[in-house]
Image 1 (spheres, rainbow, N blue to C red):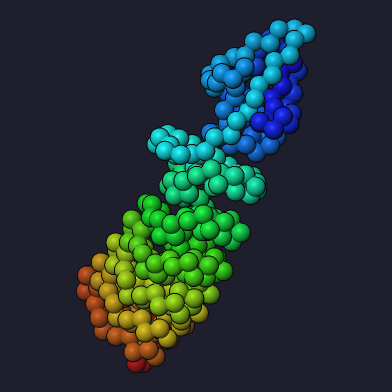
Image 2 (cartoon, rainbow, N blue to C red):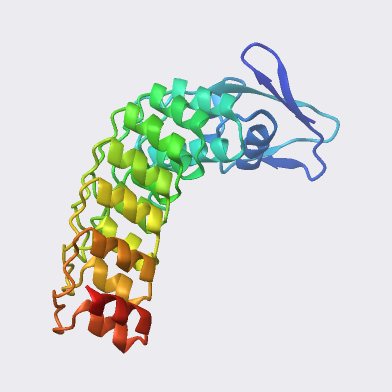
Length: 304
């Protein structure tokens, strides 16, 4: 039999050994599964000597091997250790083990190391809309504006329409107009996703309606293109430029006309959008509507 004890003397695990040996790495995973102890924090000692993860511990029949578990901190970790700690943090979050998360944070786990998908723990919490986890991370000094190729936690929350999470992050000082690798802002992401409440919250917080992404697209362009009336109205009330062109020379009105969004066309015209502007192919909103057989919109534009 193999037994593992805590420093306090508490028995943590007892394994009946049938094959004559136990793999140390497997034993650590079992300790994580049963007690939530992060693998990277575990150090197993046999008679005071550290045993390596790759070792197989021999256990003779009718004998007992006792190990002691010591939990380490993450002081001065290597890059590999930081990544491993980040993975442990993510595992604990996904398993709902906030007690383990707390232990990891108290041990000094880096909250800002991105996982293999390019997300930090705070970004994962924002993605899921989990405020409890986000508050725990912010309390542990997770950097609210830590930026990876996927942007920031605020951008991730906006993509998913998590309004309460947006509020939490803004209160924590998140930058309203930070852009990701595609130059998308949180407001662009919220508008593109049709998340009206998120758009309203960001606008009220002072997010810039005129920042554009790599394609020079604005939040208004995405809302008009989709036919999202509520988002269009929020952006227009916030003073969004009706006639801003993207890299193709197209305005929000052109996209609404091209896609047959008559209600959006009407609202944009009432907001003084210029229907005579031309795109890079010298086509107007009316010509784009005609090309895509949107007769009602062609007639609407002709009446103005």
